[in-house]
Structure formats: structure tokens, C-alpha cells
Length: 246
Image (cartoon, rainbow, N blue to C red; front, side, top):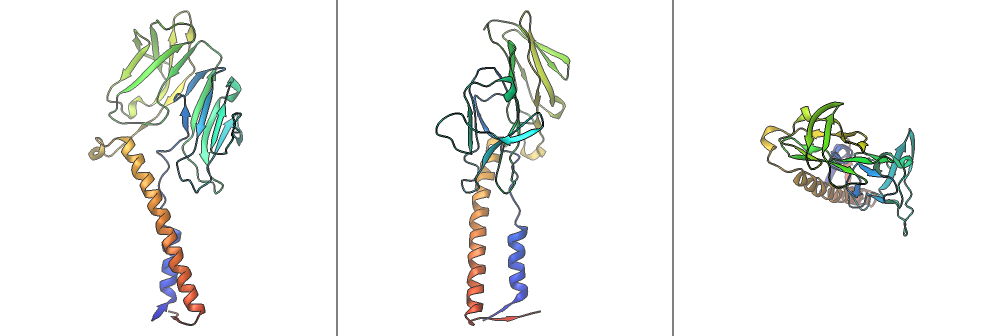
């Protein structure tokens, strides 16, 4: 049997050019699932489940300083960061990253020492979704809240909540809320993801599931290709194959 050098080069090209799955659907899982929280609240970031062989860790950017987020819970693991009593100094961007530099989306967490916070989606929402926004007070559960986008008033929630129906890219922006006599919340960014018109009925969860499957298939395919390449090299070294250079 004759194997050409061109064939081997093409095999290497397949491995090098194998497309990667976009991580735009991925971000650290947060408990509790909110972008704003009151100070002295516990919060945890989890990077497990993306790809168990990738060695994910939690990184954060606080006021321009990037560092590994080290959990103060036991036991500790690089892929999980738990903060028992979060303070305003823990505010910043958090994301998952491998040693090779592969990154997930970042989430911007705000720890507030004030009396009001806004609950909004952690991940980008999909066009057409109904998006609830909730205003929370540290000291009261009955209140009327006003909501703002990019500093402009957009509506009042009689029970501290409003819903953006059929959300679109026009709704993307910075949101905050205020409660009379209690103050206003910090601002959080609401991201809206555009989808092709024919896929509007496809949920974002199915997209994330497909990406998980793709990562697995890509890993299996890469292993098979490497095994075949090693087999070819072994046969060549044993003199059982001849190589014709073209």
C-alpha cells in the first residue's frame, strides 16, 4: 500500500483547521443566579461541565486587575469559586478559562452596599423572549418600583416587577430600578442575542445542548485522527509503508 506525503499533510490540516464550538452560550454558573446582590451575601461561580478534560478555572477582573478567583469554601477546586460573605470589593467580571487561554463569556457582578438591587438575566436573552426585571429591597417586600433603561424611565412595576415582552436588540442596554424612600439599584447590562428568523422558535437551551454535543464529537474525532496518524507513522518507521513525495 502506498501513502503519499500529501495525504499526511492533508490529515494534519484537518486537525489544525478543525473548527471549534463557540462558547458564546457559556458563562460561569452563578448561585444565586443574579448579576446584583446585597453585600454579605454568599455567591458561587462554577465552571464545571464545559469540558471535563480542559482544566477550567474561574478568573475575575476587579478594577483592571485580573486574578484567579480562589474559593473560601472547603474543599476548594480551581473550577469552582465560592465567596461566603461578598463585599463591594468583589464586584467585577468573572469568567471561565483554561490554561490554553480558551475563555467563556464573562458575567459582570455587582455587590451593592445599598438597599436596592435589580434582578435581571445573567446570560444573553434570545430575541422574542419575555424578560422579567425585578426590583428588590433589602428591608421591605411590598413596594412600587420604577425602571430605567440607559437612564430613561421605561415603566412602573406595582409589585416591583416589569416584563419586557417580545424582546429585541432595541431593548439591549443598561437597566436599573428605584424604590421611593429606599433608593436605586446599580445598573446591569441586558444583552439580547439575534437569531436567524427561521430559528426564532428554537430555545437557547437547545443551542447550548448542541454545543455540548459538538464539543464531545470534536474531541472524539481529534483522538481518532491522532491515533490514525500515529499508526501511519509507526508503519512507516517499520518499513511496511512507502511514501511517495509529490
